Image (tube, rainbow, N blue to C red; front, side, top):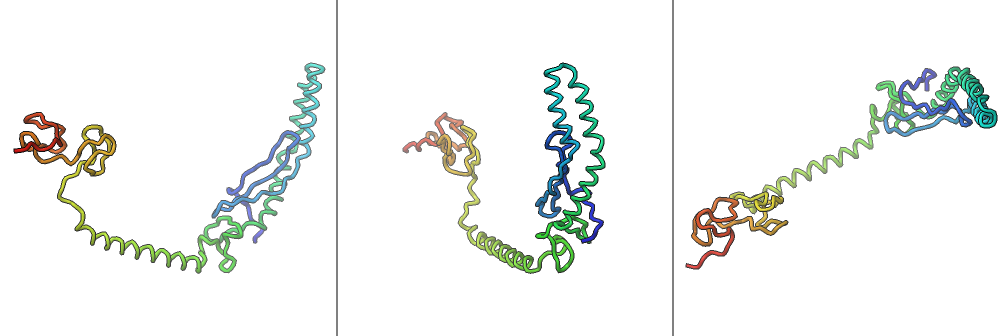
Length: 226
């Protein structure tokens, strides 16, 4: 791998400037699969010393009043003084260590991990996919497409069994429940496949009628004997 690896965008700075846990650490991620690798933690001694001094200052402030305020300012100055240069040096070392875990694709310029890198082609596997994997995927895709075509043809053969002439009520007019074309509402039991004529006066019923508009008989009532 080349020495000009910069990782301009695929890293996260986990460094901590202040406190006893102060130090440098960087997390790099593969731009193909997003797997991550973290550089070893490098302590920032000035920041750690400032953390201990701050704790001492807090203790002194509790005992002696305002003495701790001046110490706090000195502690903050100590931590800031060498932070920038120390971080840059730690980042360079982290990049050098990351070169053993990432490769830069010459085609798309992404940084990828070993699993997403094609050693034979010198490219990432997005730009140069594994041939065996692609062939297997193509075979499966071919089976899927052929099976879908067969299913469509089979469905066409079953079309004759579907009643396409009878109008279906998709929503119950009584409770508003979705009926999906059934004869009765699945929620309130209302009869959806109402007869074409009233059971009382034999008048024609408009679709979805709950009562006969001529005699007031409830739709779906047994036909009157003649």
